[in-house]
Length: 84
Image (tube, rainbow, N blue to C red; front, side):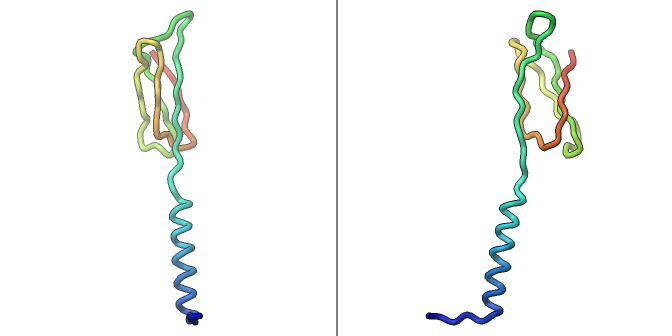
């Protein structure tokens, strides 16, 4: 069996800890899908906007003809609102 010096063991342990911390520190993001409905019908071309402290500027998308939208890569915490 091979003997390892204490410094080699320490380097191996620190390397493992560094890799584990990098893997753990990955960004977390979410996706929001929905539908904007007016009185009784879907609203097309409505603006849905997401904002939050982790976003440098708000993210905005338009609803389609069925009033549906999709916002991707939203970091927590994010707040969404719609407007016509």
